[in-house]
Image (cartoon, rainbow, N blue to C red; front, side, top):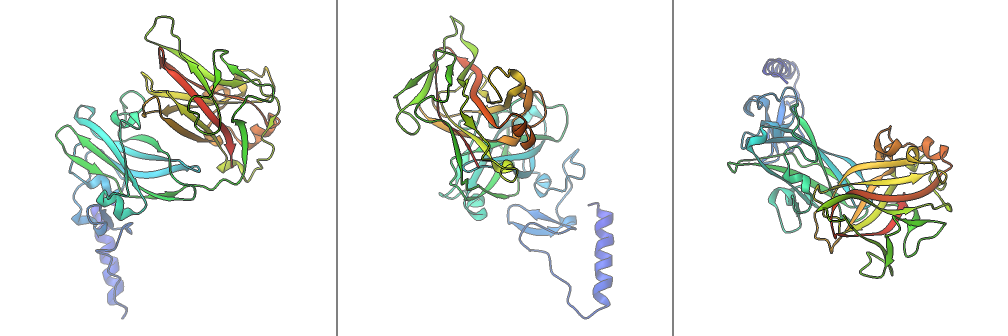
Length: 367
């Protein structure tokens, strides 16, 4: 809102108040979020008149976000929101203004209450480049963005099912300055049905892909065994590889109806995928055997920060997988039906260091 509009609003409100006996509503000091004409003071979680909040950062336009008015650092983050939630994971998106030369890092803090996140209490968890590598890059997973503001995203996992999670992003510049976003919340889902793709044995006609992938009893995520592949790059430091299962012909997702589809997600436990590029693709193959690339539904940009001995549970809504091996439109319920609800297999693909042991376990579709 411009200052002129704010003054018009103030004048209109004053005239209306003078014309009746009802006391005007006092909005200054109200807890965020704020109504028109007011912005959020993120330090106090209180609404202040827009005229008292200072000017917007350069090029912020009409973003209208309270955090965009915080001049504490040279990298401005604002408009934090959740774009999906699964049983144990949440994707968070936000916008960024600033100069890449001034960037140091992002951090994201999650907790059970907004006040806990704000105070960084012992009940919160901090996510940084060690857990989510994109938080150490100004542009996230890609090259430096050419437009401002630009969008960033990351996924936090390990949340309980049905848990309400509050979050805040902090941006640090090289001079030690910081800016913060507001503190929104999201609630994870409670899946009530599961289609197991892989648990303790490869069944339904499936086979490991490539054949070097084997079943192993070494430290499975759950159950008695997992899938395991040792990456051989034939002398190179790293190479592009895939691991998973293809050829299944007995798995059907027909139990998912149209009302379930938006909350259905693919789940896969992954270990040992600390990558030179640090990002991987997950593919769900659907349709008849021999269907080829058009039946491969892919999501790109899954990140891994833990040490190779640790498992990460990746959960991706079916609706974010893209057809034609990641180049087409998003998967939808009609497409699932057009493929006769048949699940052909799953893959993890990426550029991995020579000698890395990639583990896969507990592949499921849940809804």
